[in-house]
Length: 378
Ligand SMILES: C[S@@+](CC[C@H](N)C(=O)[O-])C[C@H]1O[C@@H](n2cnc3c(N)ncnc32)[C@H](O)[C@@H]1O
Image (cartoon, rainbow, N blue to C red; front, side, top):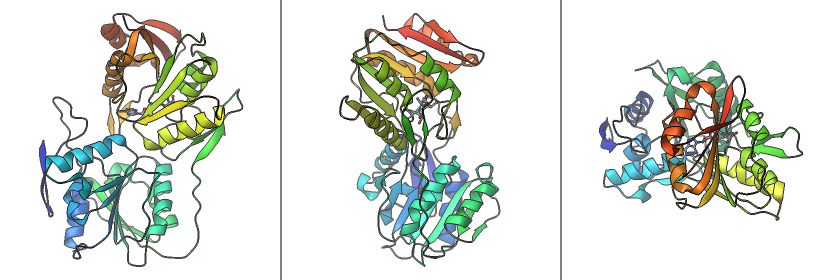
């Protein structure tokens, strides 16, 4: 665990979930820059100031500013859990931050709004539109991010939705963004959730702003849909890393007796999957929907089939470690004889990983780019 040394105190912070031999810190230079800026401008003189923090990753901002009881909005279950864990690590009560998901913004006006720039422009647009009603003439908004994540298109969104925008010079490869709130009274309607018709079906798929492949069906997912099992022999099917839930939805259609569970660490993904499944099956089928890390909270030996299009990154960190975590947890959640079906780019080498873990792995289908693999729990 490393110590964040901030003008608001020193705090022990870890990333979540904790990994052996972690090499990455739980905060970045943009977090430090934001905290120093608040201090230099003395923006929190008043202990009663209402503070809103958006996209804090593991609590660098929420834990450092916990004495102001900030409202914290994040789409990530891992961020929610990491922030709570880091409050506890510093002997601070969990209640010192009011943590909400990104479909549940608070109401009322805020004095200070801090926003870590998200990777997705759509998510940023949705967040800026969501904070407009929370701005008064005196609200100060400070956004921050690493230079590589801030583009002209990023600044244009601030200009369009909040008001005239300036940026700081870069410091340790981080930059701050200072939009000035101009209360022009105009209403901006969010274009999210947005949707598309799922090809070869009549399903209208809706996607909240932060969801994977929000504009159209991902090509890997399309290939997976073409090869989903349809023998109706699985009682409980889990769509692991469900995104908008199209994989589970089509699996439900082709396996009419199955019960479906949709899991993702993004609250917007889980909400999209729930809305899509319920629209497709109205009151005729019941699905369950859970925001969690991989399969945490799901009963061991309870699933017959797990369908998985694994992510290549967790927040900003790229790698196959989440896929491997998903495979390990799938093995524990599957019943004996239960199967995991995985789609991935051919070069990712999931075949060896599954074979090592399950003792077997076969190819269901492959094309130039993707391979669909299946392994059974013995
Ligand atoms: C490649 S996308 C697949 C989405 C969807 N199944 C599809 O095929 O269109 C991977 C999904 O995994 C989710 N994810 C990332 N990390 C996760 C974790 N630790 N636990 C659960 N889901 C996670 C992402 O939010 C994303 O929706």
